[in-house]
Image (cartoon, rainbow, N blue to C red; front, side, top):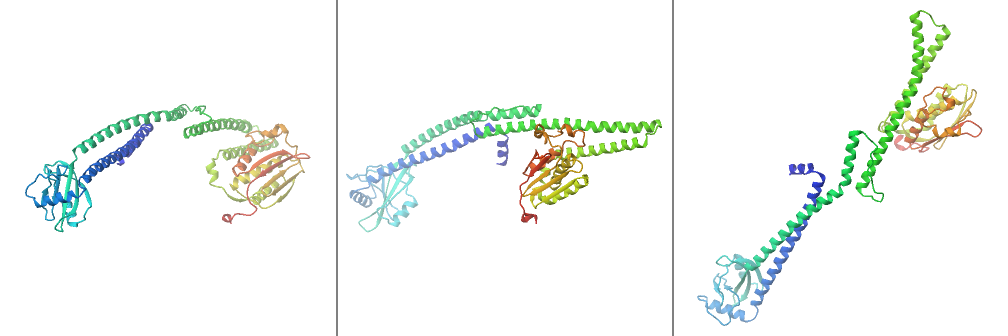
Length: 475
């Protein structure tokens, strides 16, 4: 059985569908045919039993049976004879006395004898039996009282040959019709399977084409009004290939932008190192002040490279890796930690903060990095001696600086990867900070915006869903 099941599963889908349709139709046709055959058999037997019952009605039956028993040694020709070739009386002691007009003898079964001994007068019992020559009969047994206060069984029968021939013919007809129906159902099932699976064939061809050529521009045409499983599958495939194409485009763009951003610090590093190396090789020392400036430049470029590589690693981390580290985070503590770092980077600035408790679900390190990036931007663009205002109230974090602000035409691009405003290109940074902020906040279920502040400067607003108290499982 397991081998047959395994072999069935290896067949093509349309072959399996055709076989299942044919099997279902065969089962239904078989059930109907068998039911029809038994109904016809019951009707034919009812007709035979009705004929037998009519022959044994009337007071003359008792007289005929009594006479047959009295003269059991021979078969007298009586005017009151039975209208059947099979009729006999069976006594309690098992004697069989043929009735007048009977030409054949029915084989008496043990059930007939038991019925006679039970003495259920008037009850009719039907069964299939045979005569002495083996001919099939429909037999009826009835218990009758006699003049001597005993019981006798009246056994009559009619031949079953005509009925059996009719049933055989009916069985052949039903078998033939069933066979035609099953074959037709199989052919219809195959045609329906081919028509129904044609979109699946197109989908298969598209998937094989993508696997072979890596061409993600393939789309499967889908009728707009269609909403069946095949249409939904086709739409899902189109959505998937579109997402993959966008992902590949973003990946290529990221690689190109990263290469461009890496080229500048690497070029500067190479130039500075070549100057130091040439100085060592030629024996002409670089003035101390210039050497110190070169080393400071090398250190700054290395720091910028390390920051850029860290940002790229952050952007390349998958959603699954992030999901494993998500936990309940006290946002107020994260903001306080970021504020301490910001004060160290801008000691000449005045940073005020009004932080209220708020708990969110996020990755702690990523969330802290995002808030640090926002504060770093505020520190970077604030004038010397300037002021930065930070507030956290019911999940809304605002960071306002009093720097030059952002031009209106630049606001739509501030969260793009590697985008830097013209005024910021001379400042250190990779252009990935705000992109990381946007991604981290979105993964935590929130949103972030940058806008020009009234009176000058920029205000960054982060909204994160959460609660003012920690949930019980975080305690």
